[in-house]
Length: 148
Image (cartoon, rainbow, N blue to C red; front, side, top):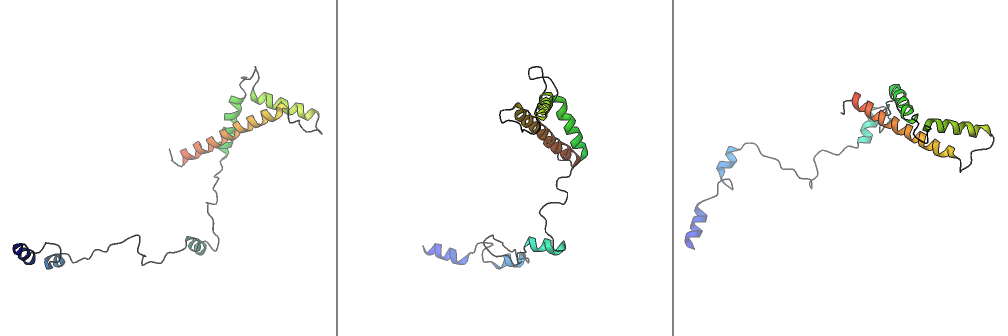
């Protein structure tokens, strides 16, 4: 036991408490932690945006929709072509929708009944159109802005 105590007292572990380590590294490494406050004060991004933009703050770009008439034109044509195929008992969805508009206009002051086929054709036709336009916008803008 005396040998262990003398051994521990006479030798030191290199890197822990020796003077050679502190001389060799002139730079002190600063440790950071998420629990400690940073020395830089946190800034409010809203106040920074207001200061740089003349007092106005916007969350989105000004032209966030980035409308393009190519998408509207190709989307409308892209929906009219498949919806004009006679797939429903020899009739097309576009033909059924437009003929139901004509039938409902024949008794104009009276609105369409809730059981009228007009509502079904209107919802299906517009749902398909808006899906085609949405996917067209995603595809066209994704291609032009090189997302894919």
